[in-house]
Length: 294
View 1: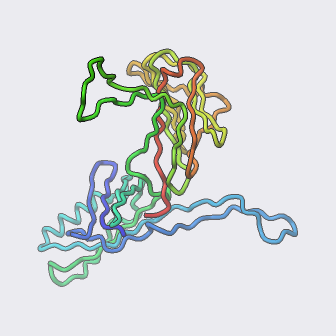
View 2: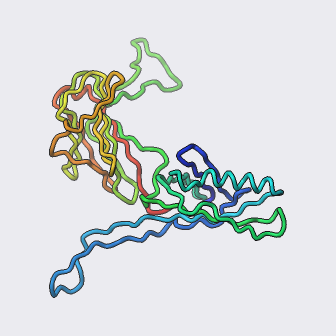
View 3: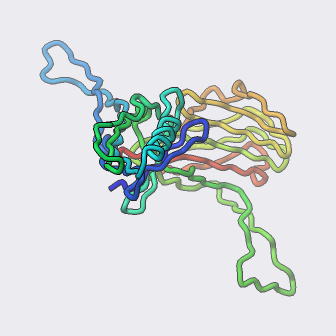
């Protein structure tokens, strides 16, 4: 059960709704159950239909709440805070806390009903109900923090209690694994952000999904200290290089047969490679799990 919600709009104005007041979260709705549309076709004289795809609809979140105050001044102040935070002109995101200890997020939210109050009260310290509605274009809830899988990076080799040996001790150990399994524990495929980091001149870095045979490859020579970022999100597909404080678009250097990989539900065995000096290449894959409900 949801016990607390923190909402923050794009201007950094945030507000908390909880079970302790003075802004009581009474009945959140729309955080489970989700409708979908079926894409189907039918041939002449066919019994039934052929279902080719299921598409999830957007989600509407409804927050039924109460406020409790001792005087009209407090009531006015809380109302102003609510209006400032839940402004229909501003995008926002939400952190959702549950009794089970899980923390989920909802992003790119739009207010479709600013706080609507029931001001039919007789005494100042009565509970006053209000309702807020938000549109959630991407219907999935998500991890608050990005997950990261590392390839070819240095792993720290100092642990406490630290004992120094006579011949010395290495500060770090090279992670030489070129293959790793990334487990998507969510309920849907999820996009990724791939970061290639070159310690020296490296030609044509790539990653490869062993299960699906998809890959992302750059026909490009990286310079020492250069970073390349590839993002596979809908509406935000990018291939960018960063070197000496300068960011440039290198989308045209993406191999024509590359695929903007998404992680499948469950196991995803990923391998990284390059045509030269693979031991001097670091690769980081960032992703966020998507969930159908809270």
